[in-house]
Length: 267
Image (tube, one colour):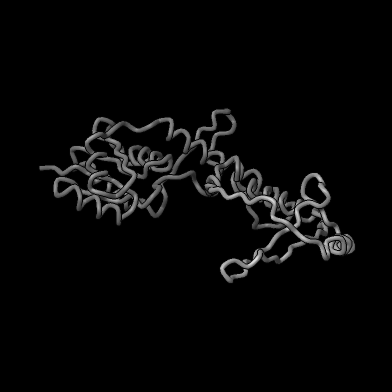
């Protein structure tokens, strides 16, 4: 009796999935991507304006594909259980194309945790490949190739050979450069603050110490700004020898939430 084939990306995951699913399945690993744009040339049709990519099997994946092709022929059903993201979706599509898996024989399963329950649920509800995710990954890869192949030679001519440009790294470098320019343009401004160690009248034989920070003086609006030592000394002279009164004490509970995680627009 033929066993169903399960293809995942890593050998460790293959062993775990095999253990959870049992002897009716054979789990094998693709070891990540199996096809990519060719080395040494663009591999993207820029002339037609369609930007159609041309893919080639990676040299180190030919043996793996041969093993997967053989296992596919022996299986009744092929479950594509690559990672649950656009890269994983594209790997499943590349596997179908490279191994020539019949569409009626292939099923896509997705799970977000390596547990028996999650894997069982995924295999109970397989689906077709998501063309939108596949197209998104191809667009990402094509953009990487165009930007890298077009801009890197400019860097070689303008700066030095060996440098590379990229869809992500060049933008990230620009953000770093802009931030460094802001830092270099920053003009530090001197400011002073005044704190006073005070004590309340002793209660129950204990002296109650606390620190007070100068916020305003002579009913100034907003927090007082002390620009230099001279102004600080003037204020200290005015405050020296004065008596102080705690006019009001407010106590309240507050909730402090951590800042939201960065997303692309806030990074």
